[in-house]
Image 1: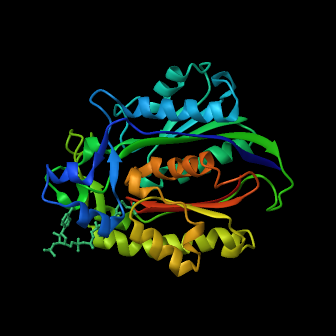
Image 2: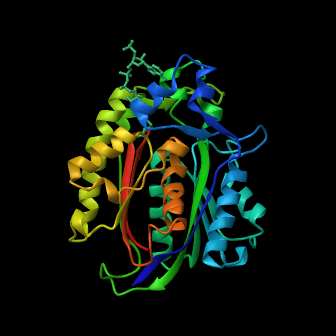
Length: 324
Ligand code: ACO
C-alpha cells in the first residue's frame, strides 16, 4: 500500500516578537496573568504588508530544503488557514507561484481553524494513498493578529502568527504500524458549538472580515474531552497504547489544555512537545511549527512514532499517528 512519508519539515515565524509586557501596554493584562493561565511568554506578529502567503511560502521553502527537494517536485499543495490573503482565490495558488512550482497541479486552501493542519494532512494523505499525488506540500499558515480585537483582553493575548509545513512523499509500505509515514488520521466536527469560537464577520454575512470571539472556559472544557477521545481513537485504530508513542505534538492552544489532556491519557510530560511559550496559539500553523522545532532540535528522530492532535472552531478536532 502507498504511504505518505514525511520527507521534510519547515517553519517560519515573523521577525516581530511581541512579549506579554508589550501587550500589557495595549490592553489591561499582565505577564503574570498570561503565563499562569496559558503558558504563553511571547508571540510573533506579522509586519504590515507581510501576508499569510509570505509566511506559508517561507515555511514551505524550509520543508523543501529539509527534504532536499526542488519546488519542481511538488504536485499538490493543501494550505490550511483561517486567515487567507484574500477571500478568493486560494492562498495556496499564490504559494504555488511564489515557490516557483511548475503550474498545473492542484493547490487549494482548507478551513478548519486550529484543526486545519490535521484536516489538510488527512486530505493530502488520501491524495497520496489514491495515487493522485507523489509529493504533497501540507501547510498551516496564519496571520491571526489581523482578526484579533485588541480591546478584548480575554482573546487578544492568546494568539500569534506563523507557518509550518511538511512535505509528504509517496512510498510503498507494508500496511503494518512499523511502516514509515502517516499510519492513520481521525477527524471530527460538531457544528452545534459554532458560537463558542467564531469570527463575527464574513463575505456572506457582514461583508467585513470580522474579529475573533470566544467563550474561553467552554472551549477549554470541550478541548480536554475531545482531544483525549481522539488520541485514544488513533491508538485503538492501530492496536497501540500511549506507551508506544515516542512523542505527542499537540495543538498549542493553552499549556493547561495540553497538560490536562496528557494527564487524562497518562502520558508523561517529557513526551509532549510544547512551543506555546514562544509561539502562542498560531491556529493551523501550531502543530507543524511544533513538529518542525522538535525535528530541528533533534528530539524527534527518524523511526519515532508521533501523535499529532488539534481542536478548533466549529468545533473541529482530529488526530494523526505518524511514523517519522
Ligand atoms: N489579563 C488579565 N485578566 C484577564 C485576562 C487577561 N488577558 N483575560 C481575562 N481576565 C480576567 C477575567 O476578566 C476574569 O476576571 P474576573 O474574575 O474579575 O471576572 C479572570 O481573569 C478569570 O477569567 P476566566 O475567563 O475565568 O479565566 P480562565 O482561567 O478560564 O482562563 C482562558 C481564560 C485562558 C481563555 C482559558 O479559558 C482558555 O485557555 N480557554 C481555552 C481557549 C483557547 O485556547 N482557545 C483557542 C482556540 S480553541 C483551541 O485551540 C482549543
